[in-house]
Image 1: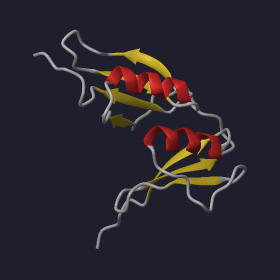
Image 2 (image 1 turned 135 degrees about the horizontal axis):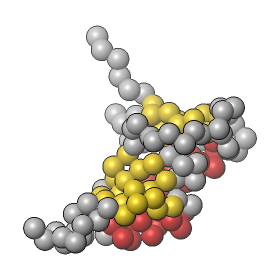
Image 3 (image 1 turned 90 degrees about the horizontal axis):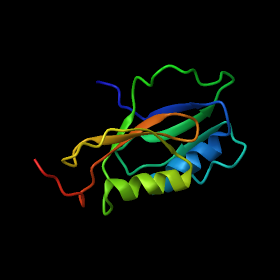
Image 4 (image 1 turned 90 degrees about the vertical axis):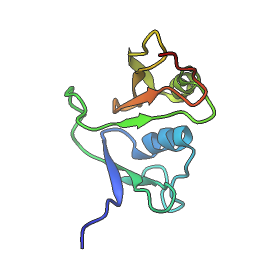
Length: 129
């Protein structure tokens, strides 16, 4: 018997509930009904069979080291540009735009605590080879 991945955990030097709220709004999935502002652990519940996103308060501040793991997100029903604008409106910021002239590539972003993620081209983006 092999283990299953239950959660993908984010260490938070700030308020876990606030970071969970960013990801909840961005991904469109709820924060667990058991979790409240001020809690040391807050869970964003994803569909059955998908690991939840767990945000845990830690004492140490985030280091300046590059993330060794991150999400690559593909927009649904939006273009990459629209998804990037939406993420920024929720509190994320752009680190690097690696969009290529032919439409391929991605935009490297950071959530409000600096955790990196990428927004790839969306299903509505036209691709030219």
